[in-house]
Length: 78
Image (cartoon, rainbow, N blue to C red; front, side):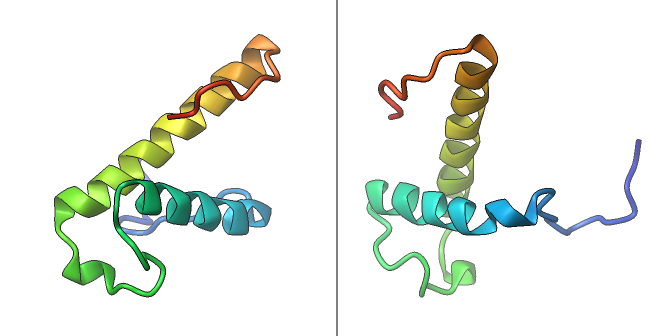
């Protein structure tokens, strides 16, 4: 199932955009990337940007697994 939207990141649920941006900022802060919202992402290394995206994915998968298992506890998200 190839998509013609190569190179774009479309948010499937637009209502989640603000929450995703908040999560991104929190994770960047935890990784020591202060003022991540104001920084030109092109000036960061691929590794720095990759860490933020990777940790976001990890947390989102953890949240989905908890929801699927019926667990409501957030536990340790780090």
